[in-house]
Amino acid sequence: MTDKEQATTIIARYMDLLRIKTARNMELEVDNQLCEARAQLQALGVVVEDLTIKTE
Image (cartoon, rainbow, N blue to C red; front, side):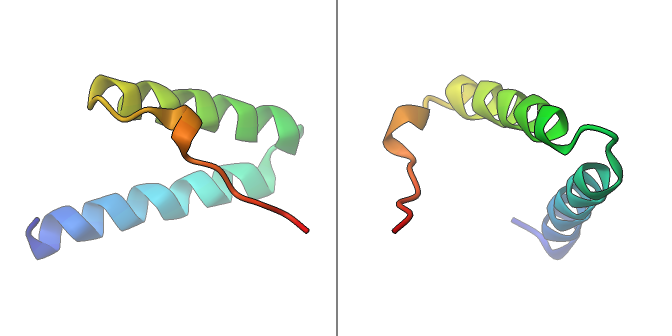
C-alpha cells in the first residue's frame, strides 16, 4: 500500500469517527458503519464472526 493509499484510508476512518461524534443517534450511526464495514470485509472473504472484542 502506498503512502497516499494509507492516507486515504486513515482520512476515511477519521471522517467516520467524526460522523459518529456528530450523529444525532450515535448508536444508529455505529450500526450503519458496522454494516458497511461488514459488507466490505465479506466481499474480501473475511469471516467477520471471527472478529470479536472481549470486555471484562
